[in-house]
Image 1: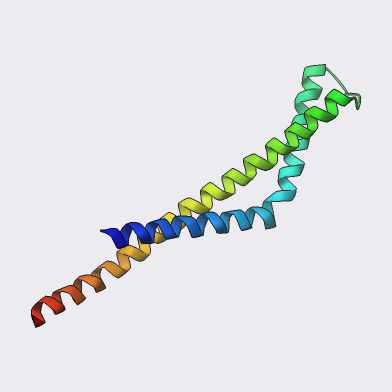
Image 2 (image 1 turned 60 degrees about the vertical axis):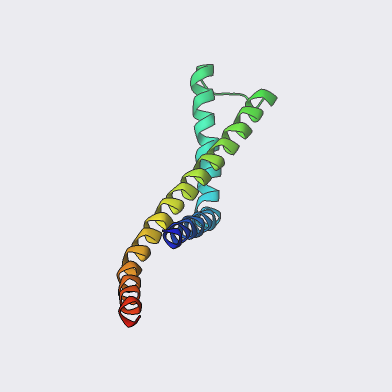
Length: 110
């Protein structure tokens, strides 16, 4: 039972690491774009029209940009972790019959 848990945990960790790498390659720029654009749209609707580049508006856009980056990073890491867990279960399911045959053969030789 213990090797199964270890294989699934290893798959989860590898998947999360690959999700983080995928975020750095593919998700950083969209995180900037969608976070800043989304916060600008929200501020425009709250103000009722075009916004002036004041300090408050710039701070709100900076917070929105950071929020967009964090959201996309968390999605990439969670999806990678789920995919890694699924692969861990798949590898465990494929290797379990071979281990059962080896165990049965070892018991038969005793």
